[in-house]
Image 1 (cartoon, rainbow, N blue to C red):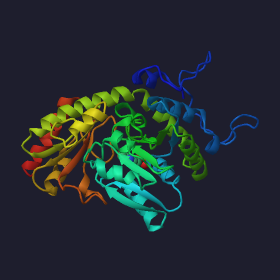
Image 2 (image 1 turned 90 degrees about the horizontal axis):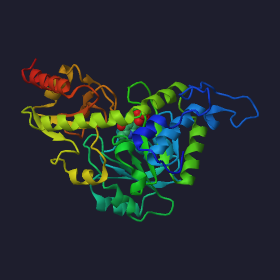
Image 3 (image 1 turned 90 degrees about the vertical axis):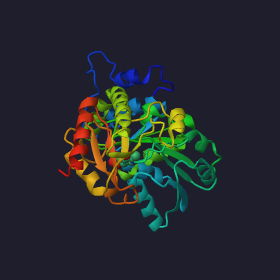
Image 4 (image 1 turned 30 degrees about the vertical axis):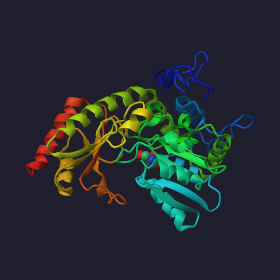
Length: 374
Ligand SMILES: *Cc1c(COP(=O)(O)O)cnc(C)c1O
């Protein structure tokens, strides 16, 4: 990882982490190795990495100008952060945080590993207060699926306990649209399953941090827990990263256009997109983000059955969970275990790379078909 990156993000993503020797392949090879011949710097892949992971870490770390540690999934990365906590710690967590993180936090409470308080994402004063007592401030911005944008700079500037961590789940914005470390966070985490991979064909996670002690701790946990990424997965994640800037930019453009159109649709009761002036955290989003992302949540009129019917009727948009891929996906979030507190008709749309007008026709047809009861 270079200490400072002179190239702009799009050029960096395309060019970093490539072999330099004459005759070498242009791409880092997919190194499928568990072990290496004795006498060199590497012996065993779980603890000593492979050249393919190191290329991925160089590329993704360069975006946030920090060393990166890659994991076998986003949740493996999350679990590695929680593993750094002292015995009996206190954690501050958003009320509307990624449900995997909430479940992991609850499991630790049940085992008396830590205590947890849940705070509304947009309540800066509450978060600043929690900074004084928490060993871990877990921030997620924009949040899932209400897309609340947190004033990370204000929260991270609040005095923390010695050794306390402020970690941002940056999966929705990506390192291209939000730079948590520059806003005062200790670490920035991305599920590489989403925008870095970008093709719904791998699981992965990455954490960037400039904190040397945390970096060493995360690497140690990864090696001890065996939370190491597979060879094919890192190869695919690296391939995905090459086109990430283009994908993230185009998907966000399409998302903004669809959000505007949805807001005027008679079968849509409410649109939640941080780039719309109607979003409660629009002003914060304009300050903190460099682009508003490609996730659009909207509440349909009618009831849950109506919203389910819309999901069944879309064809170009795939009715599926997850996000950040080339193909658009949509689901009704309150239908998911642990998400029943959400508005019952809220659909979370992850906008992909299809043509905006084709997506619009698909959404309109599905809304109209559901309306006719078809
Ligand atoms: C998907 C996701 C995760 C977990 O990542 P996995 O790769 O599925 O383990 C964490 N946080 C957010 C915001 C996510 O969307």
